[in-house]
Structures are given as C-alpha cells and as structure tokens.
Amino acid sequence: MAELQYLVFRIAMNKIAINLEHVLEVIRMPNWTPYPNSSDFLKGIFNLRNNIIPLIDFRKLLSFPTFDDEINDLIEMLKMREHDHINWLNELELCVTEKREFRLNTDPHKCKFGEWYYTYKTENVVLQNLLEQFERPHNQIHSRGIEVNNLLLHKKYDDAERVVLDARNLEFARMVNLFNELYNILKTTMREFVVIINTDAGMKSFTVDKIDKIMKITENDIYKLDNSELQGTVNEVIRI
Figure: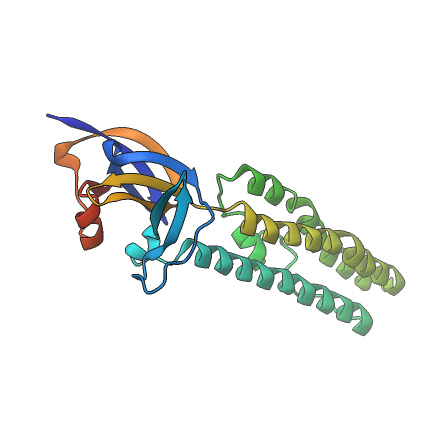
C-alpha cells in the first residue's frame, strides 16, 4: 500500500496535514498587507523575494476563532484575574480595618487564576519561564490571608496592617510586573507560522498555529477536508 509524506501542523486543537510535495517553505508570520474586497478567510498578501503571495487564514477557513482573537481573549481573561487580586487585597485590608475574619480564598490553587495557572500548558519556552515566576509571589500573597486571620484572632491589629502593606508592596507589586511582562510576551512572541505552497494557480500560503512533524500516511488513512477553497487549490489537505 502506498505511503505519502505529509507535513502535519496544528490549527486550534486540530491536527491537519498537507502532502509534503506541495510545500515550498515554512516561515514565521511576515509583515502582510490587507487585500481589499477579498474573501473573509483571505488575510492579505505579502512579498517574499519579489513574489506576491496570498495569505489564507486557516482558522477562518475552518470557522474557528482567529489566532489573534484567541490571544486577545486570553489577555482579557488574565486582566480579570489580575483585578481579582486587587479586590482580594482590598477585602483583606477592609477586614483588618473592621477587625473581622477574612473569608476569601487563601488556597492559591483554588482562586480563578490558580485554577487556570495550574492547568495551562504551553510549548513556548519564553512564556513558560515567565509563568514559573508567578508561583512564588502568588502563593505568598494568598498565605497573607492566613497570616492576617491569625493576627486578627490574637488582636494584633497593627501587625495585621503591616502584613497587608507588605502584601501590596512586595508580592502584589511583583505580580503586577509579571502580568505586564506576560501581556507583552503574548502579543509579541505568540505568532503563527505560515506554510507556503505550490498550487496549479501559483504560490499561496496559509497560517498555522504550530508545525508538528513530517510523517508517512497510507492512502487508506487519508480523509480530505470538505472545503471548496482547499479542494480548489490544494487537493491533498487532510485532517488527522
């Protein structure tokens, strides 16, 4: 049974592949220019070595949220989690002022940021290294809630005030800096790849989230994508 070599890449949570013989080059997202009055999935065009190449947004072609939309949604979610900790600290301070027990979450694994943080996976080394720096200040800031409750229980109100002040000036200040770095990294390093292909209509390209591998696939395992644009330009794009 014949085996063909395919380039496997990722689109959202899906693995898609194209017959390797069509692939000319894989590059990082280039500077591109929007193409007026074009199809929704045609992101634009770019110039590569004096070749003007159409750029197809593969996510839009498959009716998925765009890569940029996904990154922007992630940033907005993280900004809400940052604001959660502002509210958390405000409540901690209010509890000291009113000399009452602090009842918000003191387990760093169970706040909304912690639930995301301990389940989020990335293969981006720069992003992963930055995320690892969150653990210590995030754990410490939640431990301040336990410390404050112990001090309030023993009526050590001045000490409790100092703990809240330290939480703001030390742990939370560190977290704010990390959040700002995180937003910048998400905007600058989380970039799509572009696969440049040769078709009967000339060179085209499409965006992919990540290049996975090259593999051999038997003809019986090939299931072509039912998409008129792909069928009309690259008749050997498949879903794995």
